[in-house]
Image 1 (spheres, rainbow over the protein chains, first blue to last red):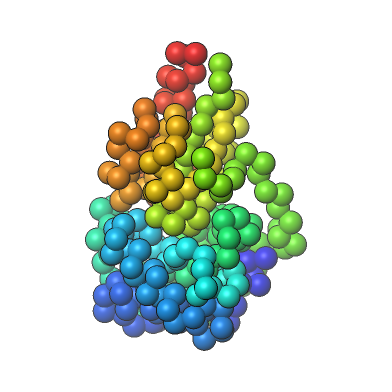
Image 2 (cartoon, rainbow over the protein chains, first blue to last red):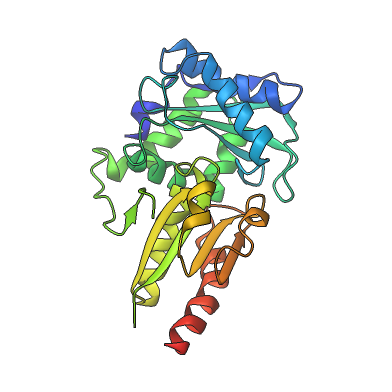
Length: 167
Length: 97
């Protein structure tokens, strides 16, 4: 499942960015280029970061770059971008950021399986280190393939008590 | 007693909050506690009647006062941090019955 989203086209290394805004654009560029989001999606993300703060920096050095579903997202999509040099987002705990995951969601729940697999990948310190040390995209793709080997079909049942509706 | 409600919040309500809620769900089940785990954006947190609100450190200052308990997480991937911070809160709430 994760391997369908993170591919040669959507995983990139040694990407230059001098500040967090450039980093957001860099993270979303693969998704723009594959037609999964429009260029305006980056503006949605930047607006959200300006308004709410650096909460998208979700772990040491890792940002989950995303905004709400809307007309700028064509389909559920994911990218993984490693910067040439880290940038700061202003996060209390987790700056500076060198790994960015771009996410486009179409509703509250349809990206759940792919996010749960992403959590397995990025929650594993060894995998994160391997992603940081990889010298070629195909090393990362091989890692993702190994990691997702036992859940290839993506048929993980949604947990019944987790819901995205408002209260 | 009524089922506990836990609401995980983030800016959009579907990125980090969804990822945290999956881990929270697992921790709650490990503890054998009946709780409803939901995720939402900040605006919905304001009107919620949740017993516990959870978010990352960069978001929890906006959650203070909106629920009896507010838990701030450093990272969204660390289940142990959730066990360490949510566990005592859930035990306290359930012991009050």
